[in-house]
Each structure stands twice: as structure tokens, then as C-alpha cells.
Amino acid sequence: MTPRDQPQHALSGRLIGSARQALTTILVLAIGTVALELAFRWITPELGHRRYDRRFTGSHAVAPNALGTRGGVPARDSAYPVVVALGDSTTWGTGVGTEELWTTRLEENVSEKTPVETLMGAWPGQDLRPLQQTLEELADDRHVDLAVVALCGNMVSLAAIREGESARSMIDTEPPKPVAHPSLKDRARYVLSDSTLVGGVLQVAEITGYLTGINHHRIDPTSPYGPMLAHGWRQAGLDPEVAERAWMLFERDLRDLRDACAARGIPLIATWMPSRFTISEDPRDNLKFVPRDRLAIDPNERARAICDRLEIPFADSLAAMRERRVREGWTPLYIPGDYTHLDRSGHAAVADALATLVSSALGGDLSPASVSVD
Image 1: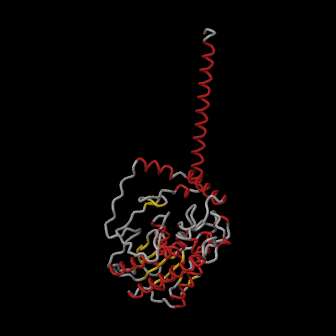
Image 2: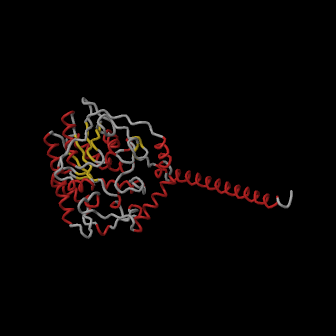
Image 3: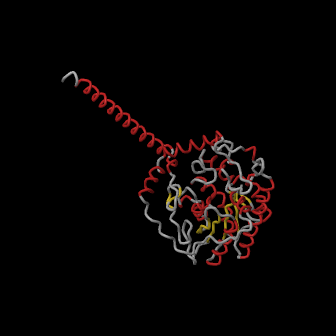
């Protein structure tokens, strides 16, 4: 080797050494990432349940039935009592599988005494008026023995937002359209959706956003979407009468639903689907840092009082959720990063709350003495 070749040889050696070091670093990072992913999947697998599109909700197959909703469809001449479950996404089951829904669990709870079938009459984003139209269409098409409506805060705000709009049944009269097979882009997106590590990072980022005030719970007074209005959210520029009027319209719509059921000889039972931050004072129930001092209304008690006035039997799902935690230990009850949509334990608690009233109603005992279940 000549003296002139020595610097070039040294440079090549350094480049090779740097490349090896880079490859080693990449390999260590890859192994570490895989190890973290496996650890997250073992500890909190639900963080990877983030497929949401026409095919999946929370990575669970949607599989719409002949009516365009979820779950089984009882035969028109079913030999068993049929319970129609009315509600929005909290009943339809955003984030959970069909077998985990409170409607499915209710069948199991009640069937121990009385065989029963449930028919899903719930779709995301619905208020009481289209649910009434849905109930009427279902009842005119088949025999319905009982209706259960799962009320929630979004229905209160939508009662005000959609006032004066025409309502229509949500029943899909057309056969379900086949969903195309996932494209390459969809499959790549699913890889990220299935990653618990990515899910954990996103959840921490969201929590940090609420902690720092980047994310917030403020309401647009002209279009007060979301559950906060039902809680009587206090905010500068937001007239408290907006919430009171929304509750008044909500009560009117619930009265109309009750009357529609009564006209068809169908008993009606109601429950309230509580927000997660009302379950307890535990910080884990308020990861979005909702300032409770700004809440002027207890929606669960307001809904109970309305049902009392309308003589609609009321099942207390909030109490059932708290009881489930006492009985089984602390459990989230809600899907990760959400204070509205229930996980499988939350749905099971709703089924627990409803079981006694549903059994009584199907047995013919729906007396005023059974108006509430605590």
C-alpha cells in the first residue's frame, strides 16, 4: 500500500465502522420496539383495537344485519318475546363486538327465567325522534313485546340542535351493500391501528393535550354538540337556559316515544348511559380532565326524574356500574380514551341494571313500584 492509498483506506474503514454502528443501532431499536409492542399487547391489548371504518369498530367486525344495524334479527313469528333496544352508538356498540353488547348480555341474563330475543334498533348519532320512527316501523312490521331505550347526553343536545327537522326511521330497507376487500392502503392503516405502542402514544398525547389546555370541553352555543350540555356545562357566553331548553325538548321527545309505544301496546323501559367522569372521583375516570365544578346538572338524576313524571320504569345503569366495580374490582367500563362508549364490562353492567325490569315486564308485572332499580 502506498502512502497515498493509506488515507483512502482509513476513510473506507471509518465508513464501514459507521455503517456497522448504524445497523447495530437500528437493530437494537427494532428489537426494543418489538419488545415494547409485545409488552403493551400483553398488558393493555385494548390499546391496539383502533380499526374504525365500515368493516370494523374498535377492530371488531361490524357485520350489519338485514336491517342495517347489528346483532340478530328475530323471526317475525318468533316463539319468544322480542325486546327492541333503542339507542345511539352507546347501544349500537362503538368499540365492542356484537357478542359483548348489552343487548346480547341481556338475552343471557333474562333467559335464565324467560327466553327472550333482542332486536337492535340503535344507530350512531341518533336522537329520540328517529328512534320513535324506527320503533313504529318495527312494531308495524312484526310483533314487539317490549321496548328499552338507552338515553344519553348526546340525545339531549341533539333534541335542541335538530328541533324542527324532519325525522325518519333508521331501518335500512335495502339489502346490506357488500364492503369491498381492504385495499393495500387500508391494510397499511390497519397495521398502525393494531399497534398497541402507537395507541399508547396517541392516548398519552391526548391526555397531555387536555392537561395542558390544548384540548378542551368548551361548547359552541350555536351548535352545542356533545354530552356536556346535558351536564349543564357552565361557560362564559353560554346561557344556562340553552341546557334547560334542550332538556325540555328531550322530555317532549321521550313523551312522544312513550305514547307511540302505548298506542301499540308495547311497554317502555328506560336507562341512562352515564359519562365516565360521573362514575367515581378516581382520576382514572377523568383522564380528559373534565372540570366537574362546571357541571350544574346530574343527568342520571334528571333522566330519572323525567321518567318518574312520564311513568316510564327506569333502570339505574350508573348504580350497576359502581356495583360491578365493588363486586369485581376496578375495571375501566369504557373503551380506551373514551368517556362515552362502554367496553364489555360496561355493557354487562347495563344488562345487569335492566334484567329485573325486563323480566318483570315480560312477566306482566310492570307496576309503579318497579319504576327504578338501584
